[in-house]
Amino acid sequence: MMDKVYSRIVANVACLERMVELLDRQHVPTRRRALQVPFVDPADLDQADFEELVKVEDAEAEYRVGQFDNWADQRRKGKKGKGTGPAPKDDSGWRQKCELLQEKLARREAELGQARNDLELLRSDGIGPNDPGNELKQRLLDLTKKNRRFQVTCESQKVRLQQLEAEVKKPKEEARKQAEELVMQRASELMGDGLGNVEDWKKKYLVSSNKLQEVRHEAQELRAQLQKQRKVLLKEVGSEEALQQALAVADDPTANQWKGRAAQISQLQRQLRELREKVAAGGDTGLTAAAVTMVPAAAAAAQPKVPAVSQAADKRREEFERLQEEVEKLRAEQAEAKSKQVALKSRAGLLESQLREMKANSQFLLRKSDDDDALVAAMRRQMGRRAEAGDVEELDEGGAAAAELEGLRQENEELQGQLERQAQIVVQLRQKSLAASCENGSVRLGPKSAESSVSDRQLIDRVRFLEAENQKAGEHVRLLREQLEEGGGGSGSSRPFSAESTLNLKDKLRQLSERLAAAERENKSLRQQPASGGDDSPASRPGSRSSSRGMSGAGPDAEQVLRHNEALKREVVRLRAQLPRPD
Image (tube, rainbow, N blue to C red):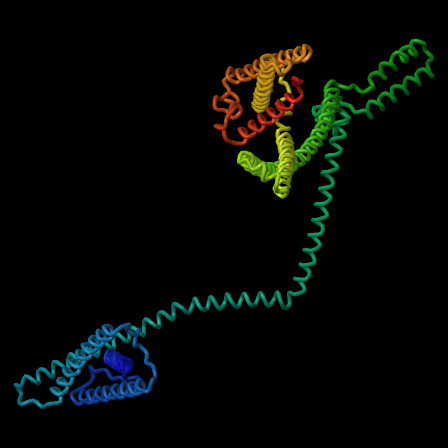
């Protein structure tokens, strides 16, 4: 339903717009050309002619109405008209447009009504000579004539303006046409009759370009040859100043400022030839002696004089060659060092991966050893409970219980053996992980350790090693002292150590005490060196990882120190086992 309403509104609006457009046309000559009616000047009309003109106007209005009806019929059949403008988007827009068109149509209808009233007034006859209608008719006729005159004047001026514009545009168009004809003529000459000339010019251009390339190559070769000759002259003459002097007098044959080797040789040969001729002609001994004395002088003058600048240049050249050789050696060493660095990086990565694997294995073995210890302790508690229960008679009576007890004992022994093997494996793994740090720390730094050439990392490794050695030696001394006290103050059933073993133990204690004191002194000196230098190194800090002996310094260094302490404890146990036991 809404679509139908919209379609009707669109049709009505289009019709109203077309009607308004037709009513707005007030150009009389254009309408007369459309009706094919000849134009007549209203100034030359009388009353009868004016009435005829009014009839023509009516016919024109009827023609316009007929045209509008035809257009409205075509619009109803679905054909689109022109000048309708853009369609509104909503109902309010359509309503507003309809209201505007209706107002415009009402104004035009009012104007048409007034025009018709005027025509009726003109057609009606007056009542008498004093009728005001006659005056109105005369006035309307005058105004109409005046309007027609103005329209004719306007049309004539428009036609004149169009003629003037055409006259102004005509020279420009003629000039443009002449320029185009000239361009086309030249192009036709080039493409038609002048085609052979174009080909000739192309050939000439190719020949000239080839010659230009050859000249460029020759100039380049001459430049290279000139550079070579200049280098040869510098080697021959010796310096740049001498070369410039020689070039300055090269074109002057009478110049005596500088002479080349060939000129000197030719001069000496000429003098020698003259002297020989004189000697052969005169035979004068004095002349011969003069010639003899002159020949060494000339020979000495002929010898090239090597200036000090050339000697310095030779020395610099030798030094430059030697430096080039050193640079080549250094480059080779640098390349070799780079390859070694790459190899060391790959090796370090491989060792780190192996270290991680060893840590994981050691942790697994430690957990397993803890589980085995717990199992052995549980079995021991179970055996102790059975022994305290007093079920010995039942065990003797039941062979199965005895067999079970024997099996438990064997299993206990096997577990203990397995535990010992696992402990040995753990010790080996820990010793391997601490090998690098022990090797780095076991190297003595010497009395020049306080110099700037020793790095903080070396001092830290040395301090850690000495701390571990101090702990190991202190533990060893404590165990030996405990053994001595036990041996000296034992019960009557235990026999004291022999004199030889006691002396050996005392010597070992003395040696260990000396080693411990020396290590403490060295450790103290190493700790005081960074503090005295004002260096805030990790070894000089009170909370450093190297000085942490407990579990408070949790981290890689603390774990390493703990593992080192455990290894030292096991070594002390091994040494204690090697000591002679009392009978």
